[in-house]
Image (tube, rainbow, N blue to C red; front, side, top):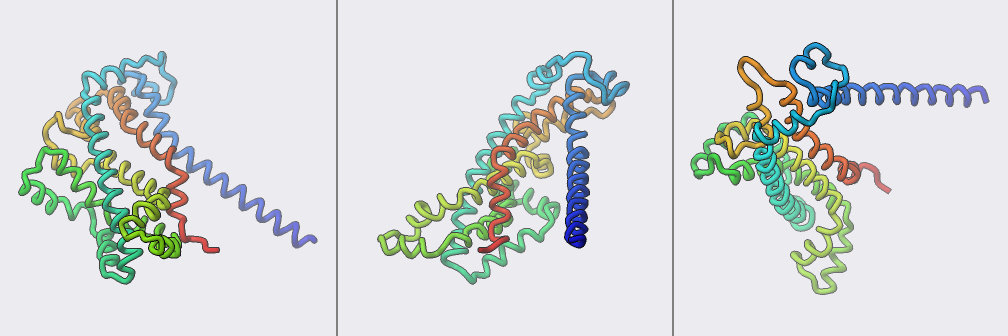
Length: 280
């Protein structure tokens, strides 16, 4: 009995330690976000003198100024358009490729080929992508950025969705074939609807990547009217002086959509990533 009580007390102690570190980590992640929120309602003087104090008044002046005069409204629309098209295109390509790899070409070299795509550093692809986009005449064209974003996310999306599709019983395919369905109908009527959690995860990561990406956008989009929101926020900085209140307001315009998207699809993300981890 004493041994059982000792084991139980040790287990409770470990739970307390685990929750302590989780709370500490959550606070470390929330403090910078809260600082940005508070600073978005201040001017430079208040930010430097009282960086962590509450604003004297919660005036939306910085938000209005950065949205209208800072051009964030244009950059926001550009990013929304590029991210939406990237997500739709990537879902289409990833879902069909994963279906072929998990249903038709079970032992294909293509699976290893796509895994190799995860091993290449993104910076190593900057020059080849730049030359390719320039040769096709897609510089300062949203289509060029969309193609780069879509191609760079294919390997991860295919690896993720293939693992999810493998959990769908093949008996459903056989039953559909008995009813007269072909491979295309099986994909659109059976596999695609059952893969909604995996597709939601792919869409979430594709949106986050295309929305937050800066390096390729900085190289491929040089016209101010075509810039994405990350480029627009970067342009708010000056060489000699920066209005950090405006900068924080612009950051909130970039952060809020990402938080909303992840909150809406976090259940699907966890379900898809853990698919296949536990059997039975």
